[in-house]
Length: 104
Image (tube, rainbow, N blue to C red; front, top):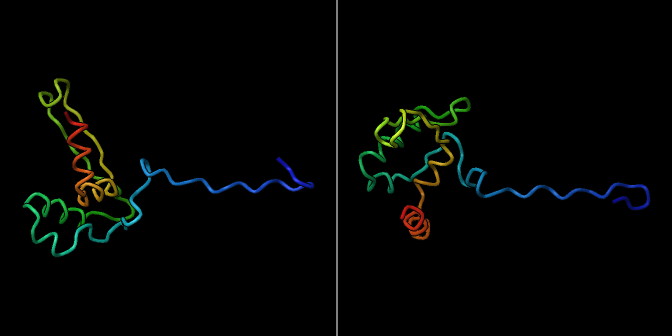
């Protein structure tokens, strides 16, 4: 729509929380505090260490593998972005409740 010969300015597109990285995620910065890491499990510490040593501007994700028997199909690979792992590392009680409901 035009007003007096000028185009109406477009509103900036809203960030979609389902497809955008968490606003607190910064690539290469720790996802967990030292206190949280001290109480985390061995696998969480290992994954966080891997992230800290491998995450850079060119490496935005980690690749996982599943066996044929895991999903009753052929073996395959999947990619998980570091920003999505940030969300997993920083789950709160509501997030965990929702995940439990979705996995039933």
